[in-house]
Image (cartoon, rainbow, N blue to C red):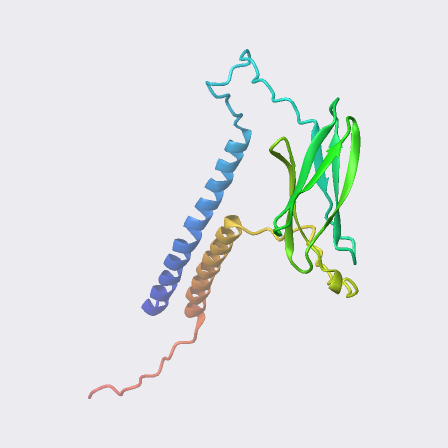
Length: 207
């Protein structure tokens, strides 16, 4: 048995074992811990009790509002819809962050009112609807009416399924690399045994 091929094969075996064994151990331990955590039911916290009374809910505001996302061109206006579900007439105000005066309004009971709010061109405008010194709706809208004739840029559709990546993939790749190195060492050990050896003497024997 030739000593060089044994040493080379042993080096391959050791390197492959150092790569493959830790990766396989970490992969199996990660799967077992994940399955255990998935099957363990969550225990209720001591502070929560099924007999404790639920906290009192704050009554809903009678005035609600919604701000449209589409801008009407060339007027550069956005539709603000205010709803009053209460039993009396309510006052509201619409404000913008463009240094213009607030738009006051009044809405009767159980009714809906729509207000067209003018925006700045090619600049974002924050529209806020207030009632009783409270903010009931706000949104940031931008008017690009000068570019309305241009075709919209194509949007990229996100893929339905993302490729599966993560620590498990890396661990299995390391395990496969370690096994491949061990096989390489075995091939070197086997091939070194069948390799033809030089039988003739390089130097002649001394007389």
